[in-house]
Image 1: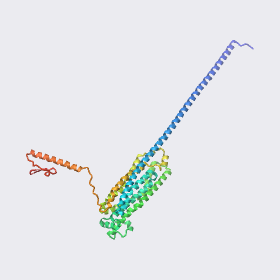
Image 2: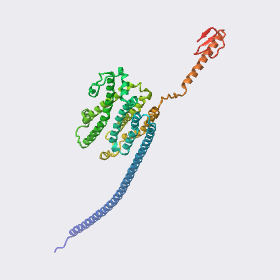
Image 3: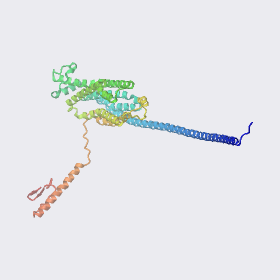
Length: 457
């Protein structure tokens, strides 16, 4: 083989050096990449452990929040239970006192049972306050029974209206219908003819004589009040059935129309709904009942003046009017105060499931107010239905007027002013050179002073 030249040996030496340097560089790069990967892996593991630790802390915080929320809900439920119990205790206390006062009032009439026919009507009227109070208290304890209690209250309202008419008739006749007819016949000139659509009930016909006219008017008043007793509970039951059907329909009805169009259609649909017809029948029945009652009262009010029937009527109808308008005002107030779509729990499904088991705030306030007001009406009944009215030789007591002495104060002020005027007049006469005659207190009256032969005002 031929020996290599020096040039060739230098080239091979340079090639080996370059290859060795490349290998060293490759090893260094690989080592650097391995170190970088190890560092990244360690950082990734540290971040993973940190995230896991923070996640555990978040889970602990969530558990604490849930525990606090549950405790808050439990506290709120306890507060609501305490509030409900407080309301129930208050209402029960008022109703208990009302019942005790009414029972004691009834006992006073039973001990002085001088006019059984009249006092029986009074006892029936006195039951109004306890029945209203117990019905409202039952609605507080069992909110789902509210509608049933309303039916009972409506029936007894109508029954009390008729009992009041029977009370007036009993006061006039003491059980003798002919005596009442004679009283009406004495006012025959002022009696309005009875309604002709009730002619089938009149016997004898009202055109026959004044007595027949009076008998027909009395029968007419009784029929008009009696129809209210039958129609009032009937319309209340119909209203209850219609409300239940409307709630069922609204719950299962899928409404895909625009809300504004639906609201307008619902408002207009009310006037064509069965409930509107029932309300109109109820209002017509109330009108005829009070028309008959007022017709009888205006015919014989002079004969009944001694027992003050108007104050008795106010105590009866005041219960109904106050509770009705009071409930309407409370409902309107809560209707405008509550935002649309607002619910206390924020969950409409929960509200829909529990709405039959939770009391409406307006309904609760109305019931507690009625429990309180019946106490005052029981006291009012005590005053306007005294037992002394039915004792022999009764005369209405003329109570002295209660005042603050303002009339006497005005009289004293006038006396001081008159004395001042008389003093100025005396001084004026002295300045003019006239001699004033000594006067006594009887010689000047109402600002006039007599001096000699001259009268000075």
